[in-house]
Length: 425
Image (cartoon, rainbow, N blue to C red; front, side):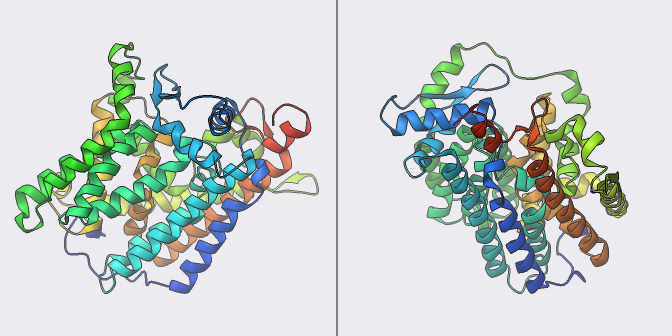
């Protein structure tokens, strides 16, 4: 149970069933591609596509800034530039969302292949592989891989920053880490917190306690400098814009990042997308001969119950949790869980930010890898959680396909219905 925060990692009875993992990865890939016309089509998605389309068609110059965020502050330009590049390849909203889906699938398989190869013969390979497998079938992860939204591009940049940071003691790796670290916050501003946390924990761990793994800091600095160039227009704008960050005492007292980390890893926060319909219409599914079976309610209850049981056992296994959290660990599992989980979360909390659910996807896929590590000694419970989340994901996509979404929920009315009614493209 202590393999998440202590070194060395013990061999796990949760065996690496490669065949099952590959099947689940295939299923998760298929679910991302299923019913693309059911994608969300609200203000953000419409703005993103129409802006990218106009620029690609030569009807509008490249914008220096992105769309306006919920705080009233415009996002950096890279947040829309990525979709402009996709617009040169995709002429319709469906074609563009197919590219987004494809990129997310490529990230899953790429990370899985990298961890399978890089961690061969190491005990911690199992939680890495199982965590990525869970990311493939988790409902909220599937939701955030089927939209024309910057959050859907974060897995690509998260994978890139982990892979380059992995080789930070080499010049090319340090350069890539600096470059991606400077770019990820320009895709979504939550990335600034991840980049800062990863840098701080690297300095604390590698520089002070593991001299043999010193970072090639000059290469990192060069990559960072290059990555900051596209940020200059936004920096000039932000310096004169009023500070409208969503801060509140609630964000300081209630560590929402960690709460969302747990619910996202368990896949039980689809109320984020469905709102009140999650309770009134989704949990009673499936409806058989007009009668609600409340199967989804039972599945959610099972996943939550097993999840809390496993997390409680994991927490009790630490005699000195503060010491375990702050101890420098060179092994990738412990290192990245501390940096991306603990330090990033603490930065969000200390800044008193009112963190919404989608901000936690800056940690992709580490929340899933964490849960796999928590259940590394409980194979049956782990497979039950995996199966439960897969059922929730299938039920959610089917529910949206049948209902067509809801105008007063976050998901909104699906694209295909708006097209058929003359409401959109």
